[in-house]
Length: 280
Image 1 (cartoon, rainbow, N blue to C red):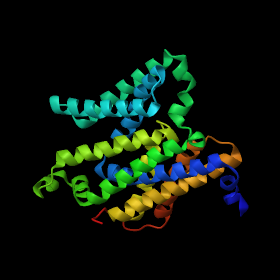
Image 2: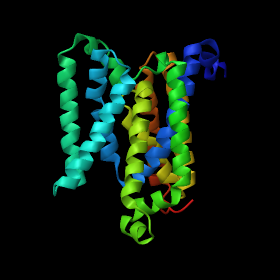
Image 3: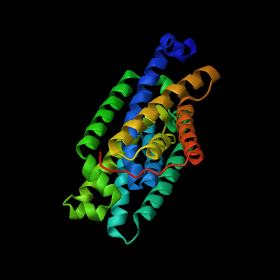
């Protein structure tokens, strides 16, 4: 059984990678659950791609990539809100427009800079095996804030996810709640891209949360189970990457996706009543 923990005992960078992966799992598990329940998966995907031009510009001018990612996420969220508010276009159309526009802008910027092109793999797929304690500290802070907000606002956020009109009737400020949820998604994407990369963040937001939604209908349990599935995926993915010389970030996300489909197939073979989310 030594093969299950030897990589983490022998290697400091594997220890850091595991800690970072678990913290990503906590943040994305909580936010991903809310995102899946609210039907905002497309926005999560768009944000994960929309940070690309901000990262590229930051690398070119010598700023930390996290600063660029934060600027890209803010521009994406602000742009979606502006298009939706000032036109008759639906939120999906606005997200789609900003999604393809920001992604195309990022590709154009990267194509014109050798410095960014050299860092492209790390930007897109993360550098979990090279993550620093500083990045881990930032991820820990984001995870703590996300968990605290989700706990304090769990009832209104769940009600808004199920029925925004009912949430308004109950006296909750749906617009403010949506802004808070958007902010939680944005900071989670920004903090997590360092570990699993801009393109793979979306997988960690959706796969563990989707798997948890198949297994439980209570919001608190769904968040906890989503985070646990993400953490198991991080551990198993790192082990597989160590022994089979695979890309660590992609292997983590692939493991999470695999767990989702295993649960899905198991439920198909053993039919049961599909759970529906309810208050924690």
